[in-house]
Image (cartoon, rainbow, N blue to C red):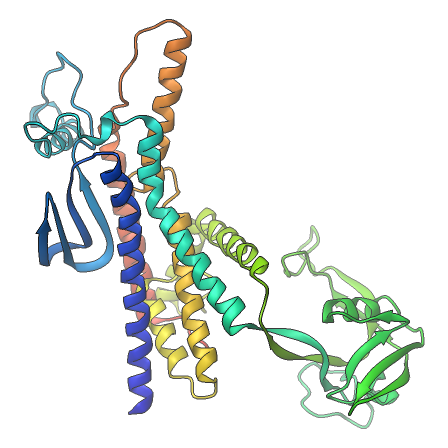
Length: 441
């Protein structure tokens, strides 16, 4: 029963955190819009039927049934048709009607006396500030949450203390025990023990595990001194790393393959040890690099999204294994949050830190995703504003009349296609997260 309650608690924590993140995203739009005098009719979290709302001043604040986003309704999002241009009706074509309907709905938000309080009449830089305010809010949330995790809770890192020392070098990777014919591992043969802290190797002071591993790899078949600290005493042991082949990895930690698809290997030194982990509170300077790395990872997922969605479909309908680093839906995020919070083997602090880091990653995803220069995303409005500024700048340089605001309503048909694609993708991810979810095991 306790496990179930903890599972539900994890889901609730992430759901509430996501709702708050969406709400703050919209506040990031709302505050500059009001500051610049734009009339804001609605501030809503969610879509669909309204669950409850309250009007304060000229703005209605509320929550809707489907908690998959939010929006603010600003007066005059789309400019009217050019003067003298006939209003379109259904007889002129389906897409033309969509454009005209968008213009008419935008015009309906403009009441008498509010003609100058419209979004499309703002200078380009103010429109960009309004539209970037939402993603910027998510970026700030991510920075704060990452700071809490990295600087407050700390993160587990490889230490310079040995966590395990292999007794032998197994000839078969599937072995669980040493065979009499297996050669002794160099570390065990030299007398290294779990719990030994590396002080120096080959005369070089050890400051980190990656450095220690690099020294070992670069000295195959060479006897080198290891200075270790054991129970408060320093010991010097002579270790001879054995020559072995290991896969080559790139800077991202991925295995390198040659042109024929074979794993690239190289001969390096090996002694048969692995590091212990320890929790370390990182300095505040580690926060922005962590947010950047997360942003780059999200960007890679977005760039390769079509391919990844094909893999998700194969996993959902064909039973293939899900990629743990691939895209997941809010349902999948909730399931992972529940598993994390109900994980009895992990300390409470570690579970809390993981949930907070999950919320930080969600805000990074909201930040990056909303910068995509396609409508209806914030980046689409920013791209439209930039294009308008360029067009007006060129007209001014050529001595031509001001072409006026860009008619972004013309992109409504494309917007609907993108919305449909996003909807289908979300439905696929939700289905996959139900029938073949990503799990912690």
